[in-house]
Image (spheres, helix red, strand yellow):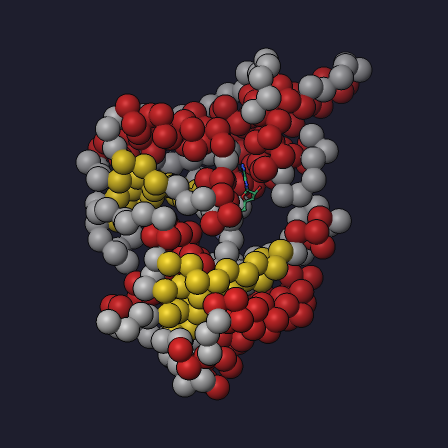
Length: 334
Ligand code: KG4
Ligand code: ZN
């Protein structure tokens, strides 16, 4: 049987990425050019800067992915590219590069939803077992998604205000930590010691929704008050308390949803699923409930193109193809 090779391309935010995936599960090559160093001085992602940096990097990144894979364009079967959601200018760079490459080499193009990509990052390490519950936690999304089978996504809960990653990044700013703040707070939170007690947003008892803006405000007010009293802020105690509050709520919702929907597997995905506190809590609670749990290795939790290739393969197998009028969809629905 001939192997199927998919070239994945991702440019929805601040990583310019390309990867080659074999049969949907095997990473043949994976290249990520991060803009983080460049964007850090602005304290976040500036869309116009992101687009320009993608333009500079995209051709090199695609060439590098093919070279590392030791493959010719004629060995590929399709080009999968993130269609949305994301920054429209950033998306367009990846989409146009994908179109040009595919057109020149007689390949079909497949538009992939960014969140489907995060979910399918799990296929790179384990087989997805249905029905499953996916917890998506990234810089732009916090959602619980029920999947009955491949390609079928039912959103059962989402954030009513900030995404989990957004809350991490904002709290990090208060603690004067560099962008993106998630990994820094995670590191501080793992050091043993006391924790500041922050509230948990439980919302209605049966709800699967999330809210992080109240917690964010509580951290900001607490830090402000400490400074106003002329006292020293203990960033580790703040990080521990904040992370505990986020992890408690994410874990309670996910485990309750998994039980209620009687799923075979729970998967976590997105940048915040790299969080050590969250990974441990989900592992522990789901093991206690006897439900299988999967989360990608850290480097495949944050944005990459291997996940787009993995999701693209599933669509390729089903016969999904996009046409040449494909456009960036900043608010694309799953
Ligand atoms: O999925 P991603 O790379 O980009 C989006 O699609 O948004 O997620 C980026 C987010 C950032 O907010 C970053 O601070 C957060 O993921 N993040 C973390 C960790 N690593 C990345 N948050 C908490 N703990 C981490 N270890
Ligand atoms: Zn992402």
